[in-house]
Image (tube, rainbow over all chains, first blue to last red):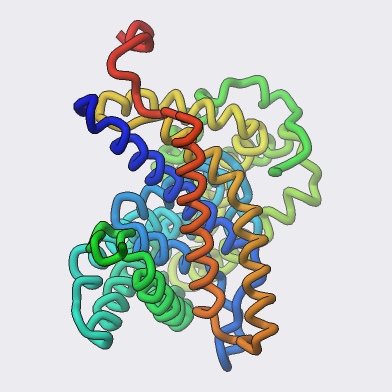
Amino acid sequence: MTAMTSRTTDSSQTTQNTVLVAVFAALIAALGLVPPITVGIIPVPITLQTLGVMLAGALLGPVRGMLSVVVLQALVLAGLPLLAGGRGGLGVFLGPTGGYLVGWIPAALVIGALVQYWAIRRTGRAARFTAVLMSVVVGGIVVIYAFGIPWTAVVTGLPLSTSALGALVFIPGDLLKAVVATLAAINVHRSYRRLLGGTPTAAR
Amino acid sequence: MTGPQRTGPLTRIPAGYKFAFLFAASLGIYAVTHLGVQTAVFVLAVAAAVLTRTPVARLVRMLLGLLVIVGIVFLTLGFTTTWEAAAVSALRLLSLCLFAWAVSLSTTFSEMLTLFERLLAPTRHLGLNPAQMSLALSMTIRFIPQIRTQYLEVREAQFARGLHNSPVAVLVPLLVRTLESAQEIAAALDARCYDSATPPRAAPRTTTD
């Protein structure tokens, strides 16, 4: 496929991408195992795994971000208890909340695409923050709920409106996670500019 | 990690058949709305779960969260539609999850991974690389404890600085460390000439064609 001359740089790029995918899959899993962060005045601790999904998309871009979610879910599907609360196995996918898990895959894809091709290229601090936050909200909340709410309705036989009403409880926590993910992603991008292949010369 | 050992008669069935059964069952369970049939299927699902010889306490612990959701669904549906419809959808959920757990509990982790690899093998023709995927899967398992330790370290350090409630102050150093270690590992893999790229049409061709 590739010419022999470009093979060495090409394969080291592939290795690096594979390692990044694996490391972020592990990060999402690890965020489910650690004691949850309490944010400011809000006493309710928030589970951090969707935060991991948001970060994977925002930091690695669409393809690698999505692949790291796929890798994590393959391990969960195979039976490792890597989801928050030690859940895992086939049951969690077929159960009433399975849609929220399946939604993680397109969520990382959408966040990655929006951040890489639109948000991170904004100039100006406020504009970039708003753009990244909007990407994370669209991918990490709208897309995930767009899978989760109908899934619950179909699996349980509840009307769609009831299912949507039940999901409303989690919106404030998810918005908070989106803000945290945005701040962290912008901070990391500032020091790791070449992650998304943006401006490799500026980093060196 | 998932349990001490797999016993019971279900372990002898190949993983592929169990997956195929689960797929067929998940379609079939939704097609049937008769309460009697659903009850029969539920009894079958309980039998399958019992056949895995999992300790009852562990099974109950796994089921607890599901039971709460199913209870809410049962009551909501019961009050808004008929109680028969509510019973059907509650039984449907329970039997499907029990079947799924029976498959998970009677199949070892390595069997599952072998099945995935076999299912993924044809993607080579689409330009993907199954060897890279296997590498990513096994590397992920190895990194989870390491990242967890790093998280706890960073968190402790930020606590000592008085940054108790600042998640960004914990996440940014964690992410930077993670990215740095990813770079080191990639460099180490390259230095050892680990080449997981597909060989340019050499030996393995004979097995696929």
